[in-house]
Image (tube, rainbow, N blue to C red):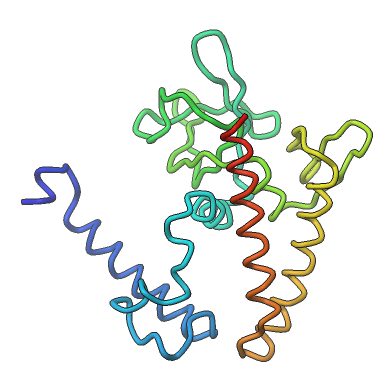
Length: 209
């Protein structure tokens, strides 16, 4: 009845549930979820779920899964144009972002397919500073810009861009040690918390402008 009312596929919901179980088992096996958390039923009240209400953190997690499939949103008179480097793209009409006002110039997407045009589907708007966590960045101090992977470019204070780059480098280093030892490392948790808090501060400062 719920599926019929909300036009949701029952089989897709079952598949999502099985995928959640698979991810839970995978994260548990590599030590990202403590052994005290035995199932999905009690993970909501655990420390692993403390950022569940922060949209910017969920946004970053989605970006982590879809990067480097990024498109630049260019506003036109009555619509928007999408570009992945020099390739022109269009939103699939069934995409949640099709025909909607976007609060960022960047989106990530899962796939693209060509019919009469090259369309993208499964899209998510992403704040630009989140992209700093995943690509290779070059900071232009004088121009107050940053370039990621040689084509993603936007304005940002050089200090913030450098801060993200240093946090990313520290996270990669601690993550490698974490994977080798497969044990809780307070440095890893601290760096993740620092990044999450920085994302929240930047989101709030953006909203207040």
